[in-house]
Image (cartoon, rainbow over all chains, first blue to last red; front, side, top):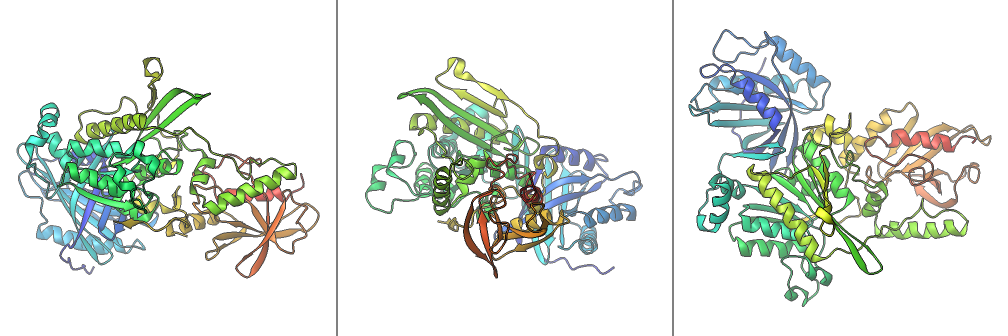
Length: 492
Length: 126
């Protein structure tokens, strides 16, 4: 069989996997350590963007007895195993890659034998799939059990070098980078380092956090994370500031309302972050997390903070967690009262992560409210007119239109909820602490803060259980899409 | 229509044995030759638009051919005529997922492959 030439890797790729997959891989790959290698095929999904590719490991095709040659120290795949992998490709939209170990203390760089193997499998698997995609990873350990990993891959004729590995578990989000940032300003981080250790401070510096929704809860969350030393931010919000925002949006000042048009929320939040930490990398996007361009950025992040308090964003956050292995913390706030008195100030925090239930399983989506959020103003107006006509005919208005009501939220409480979200983000990123429950509510006006929380499982057969790591290849099961009437997103 | 949504709709339509047509430019699906037991015509085409934000936004309404004798015979108010592709269609107020008798919309389970059942019920004698 002809072998494809291995061109020099050019574009950057990120590999994402769950903690369970990583544990399975490490157990398997180092089962013949320290002197002998071992290997396995893995199943992956992929999303290519203008800035690189993100691959998500969905599963491991564990070798059965006889699939690999056990009599030699290096890896030799037998035909039966390759055929089994190829047969998988015939019935799946996903792709097959190889991961193998190098012996202890041997660099995790491809050898000439690895070049031969990758050339062979790249060609072989391309015959079983309408799109050609192949990735090859090498893992190893030194004498002190320090783990290292490298990787490269090809999608069509484009070649990739893996720069980042992100592993997600409820409890810790690990990022193994080829070129991690090092702390150069330890005095700014002294308090945090003393409490959680230097590794935690370095971890925050090397974290990318998406803030979706840069208003009442998103802006204080970003504010706290900037002071905690998070190194990279991706800010997403479609709106400009409004005068009423001054009461609760961190980073907004009276000077922003002198001239129209008022600045975008992502602009003022970016300015706030950079005033605190000029070395932070901030990408400001005027857009929404349902939009493909915004998703291209999100899939490279460690963590998404969903601060929009909308049904469509919650559905999207859940989907990003299971399809793209991007974990999320979602926050919502609700003020309840009557006759001018506020009786309840309720906050809700939800963890979305691969293996945990999505927003639909948690019953967090009101289908009508979600539909209204996605309607154009013309559509809303048309439906209101149809509802009025129905009433005049003696019919019910509800099938056409139902108002979505709620009390306004205010700054003291949105700041509290946003700061709480940021604290759980710090805990999760550094592996130091985690929310008490995966889904909980509290009421600061109730006895014992009215805490109610639970850890649920995905509904049997739900996409969040079946499509973990399926990335773009689960497009036929997408549960959200951006409405056509939304303006295109812009990176400022 | 994004590639994801087109792929999703094509998957849903592939699950049906009824003949269907996806009008990409107009963002609509036509169920071709659905049976009706209302005693007016034996078969009819029914058009259902792909709403903005689908699949999180529920399918809603049904359109009959503008010259259909079923207008006024099927439940729901007759509304305006709309051109989809080369054909004129009449919009009928039919809302199975917003209080019209169908289940609460859930994009994990519902789509064009399930909406046809609502439409078939709509076209049948009650």
